[in-house]
Length: 188
Image (tube, rainbow, N blue to C red):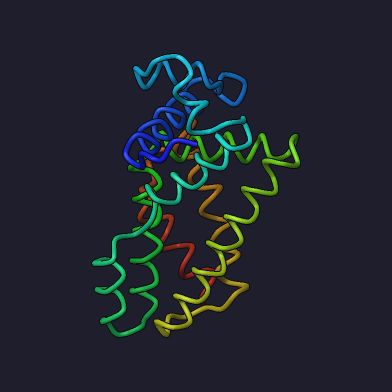
């Protein structure tokens, strides 16, 4: 496997573009090469199989959607409150809607995971690690809500994102208002 990390990230980004635009069936090594403007065979040098490519895309999704250290530090220094929790949820939704292509690619992989156990294994491990990290962050920051509430927020945010990135059922209601209502409803 080739070792150039910059090229690997560039190819993964091209793969996410292909996945978001063409769907799971359009994701091929050749399509990624074309999107990246790379010579034929470049993607397969970095990601030997389709499973390796999918694993690389999942890794890159995590990198692109991760909060900045500054955001985490700022929230860690604030007094825990429902408002701070809502701010954190708003930031998650902002990152997911701000990088629309990556979020659509993630939804594509989630759909593919329902048909391919190997994708389910990679994606499921990544999702569970992220969920455990969210629970740990929430607990360490002293924010309201425990594991159950964080799970409910994940379910709600997934639905909200699917709605906002596709055909919204209520496009006139702001995303921030929806998040405020979710926080109030789930945290009481």
